[in-house]
Amino acid sequence: MHRSFRRKLPLLVIFSLFTSFLPASGSVLCPVFAHTKYDPVSRNHSRDGSSGTDGRSGRNGRDGEDKTIFVDGSSVKLDLSGENGEDGENGRRGYRPDCHHQGDKTHHDIYAPSGGTGGNGGNGGIGGNGGSLTLYYTNLADLQKIFAVANPGDGGRGGRGGRGAYGCRCHRRSWEIETCTGTPGNPDYKCTKRRYRCYDGRIGNNGINGRNGSQGRLGKLRIINSQETLATDNPTLKLPISQLIGQQFNLSRNQWHLRQGGNSLLAPGSVIADEYREFAKRLETDFQLVWAEKEPITSFNNQFVTASLTDSEQVEVTFADDLWVAGSSQTEANLTTFTVNHAISQKDVTRLAVAEFAEAGENLKLNIVDLAAKSAVIQTQFQVKFRAQDRFAQSSNYTTVYQGVIPAELVTRDYNRFILALGKLKIPDHALRPGVNVDIEVVATRTLGKRSAKQTINWRGAIRNPRS
Image 1: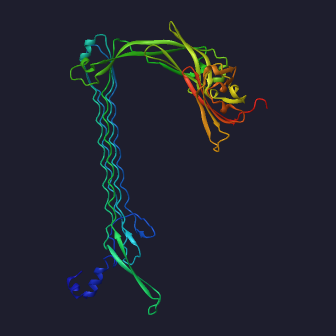
Image 2: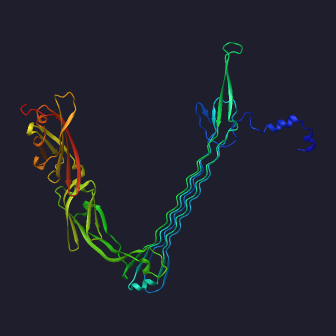
Image 3: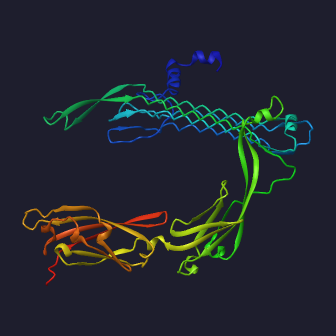
């Protein structure tokens, strides 16, 4: 603006231009950034600041290269070190809120918008593992010419969490509003004053620092006193039962001894895990499954069998969890045979039910039937909790008069029916009389080989008169 013109400008006009750039009269919030929270008494008129962006996690370091060397006395230098993990990125700072102007005529308290939370720092990448070194040799001393460094990679540093942003601050802390009712000059005209307040917005929380990445592991050493490459392991097979019957399958694995002092085997200054593996011998055997169960194998076609050759030259045979098997294993020459004598689906193990509750007194019996008809194979033990109701007491509660295992001599099995001689247990006579209401809980424990399961059977009713 030209200086001479400005001198001639009226003072009132200059003042008007100046005030047009100021906030409206009575503004209570400074112009900052925010998040809306409305409630009937106290309200925000802006939104809280947005959270900062989380930092990206660092990339994991690559593992060192695996190497296989046939040692012939030549000097070899190897770097099999793992790569360091990348650092995580820092979280971004939270965003400041944007606060609208609020006049001093508001009839409620004001909570200024809060600052945004800082973003979380990214996690550091995991360090790469040192590479594995496999050495074939005929002269152990030649390993001293192999210099190998298989250091682990360091983990990356976690990123720092971003800082929370500042919230809005109140320009005016409190104000008073007068409210009048009625008609001025009349007796019903009344005025009341109420004071309201403005509260500063909170500073946003800082973001969480990212975790440091873990260090990788040292490279591993294997040595084989041979110039012929080892055959691959095939120690385990898993097939449906129907595909195993009548066939032989080869299982094999390489057996190793764990030794200490890996670094001392190599050239001075080498860095590798102290524990190393030395090839001992190759284990091989054939495996065959024999079906001796009466039920046809087609009933179990979808069931899988796993056979594994262990380091102790034994074949372990496992079946699916929902199949109970009793069998025997036999090894002759180079063949292991597993004979399945009994196979029962697990759902058929716990299909016991009460068939009859009969007699009274010392002849009281509870008959339980096996609906799956597998009791000739499965071992069964019973426990009972016998509760009786006192007919002459005013309470209708049942009282426990016996609880414990039913001795084997008091259990009779007739094919797939069990007869429990409850009257022979140490139960008071008054609880065995006709007309007495009883509540009986029987827990049956069923076992086949190493498998076991429990089934609870309940019966409630009155003991009947045998002569009725």
